[in-house]
Image (cartoon, rainbow, N blue to C red; front, side, top):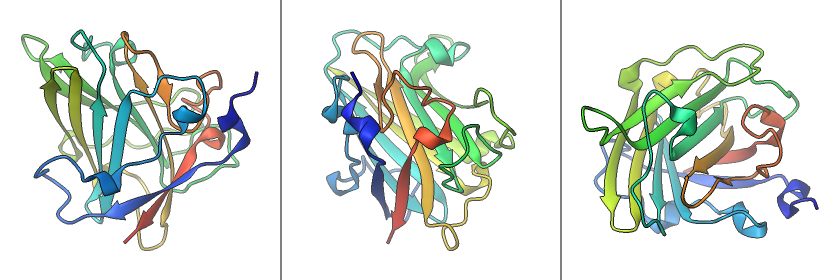
Length: 212
C-alpha cells in the first residue's frame, strides 16, 4: 500500500530570526514545521521547528513519549537515537544522487564524553553521493541538549560556513528532509515514506522556503 505522502511534494516555510545563535530558549510555536508523518502510519512523536538568517539555520527538536533514556554513541551515529538533517542548498529534485550542495548532519542528545551523556553533532557522508559536500569546520556546527522526563530537547545550529552554496539572497528555497531514529518509539521521517531510499535520494526530499 502506497503511503499518502508519496502522492505529494512537500514545502514548508522557514521564518527568519535574529540573532539565531546561541539560543535564548526553544523556538516559538510559530516556527513549527508541519509533520507529514501524521498522514501515514509512521509514529509522530517529535515537534520540529526551524529558523534561518544569514548566519545559517537553526532547528529545535522535542521528542516526547519516552520512558527510557536515549541510546546514543558518537562512534555509531547510524545506530543511535537522534536527528538526521538533510539540506540541499540548490533544491534540486531532478537528480537521484547527492551533489556537493547536499549535506547530512546528525545531532544526538547524548553519546559523547566520559559518561556518554554529552550531545553530539557530526557531518556525515551521504551514501551513493555523486560528489561529497566539503567537510564543515566543527566550529560551524553546534548542539545543546536538555533531558526531559518523557524525552529530550535538542537545539541544533548549522552555520552558513557549513553549507556549501548557502546564499539566501539568490536561493530562497532549500532541499530539505529529516528523519528521527528512536529505539523505543520507532523511525519517523519528514516528507518521504521510510520504505523509500529517502536518506540518499534528493528527488524524495521536500523544500524549505526561507521567508522573512
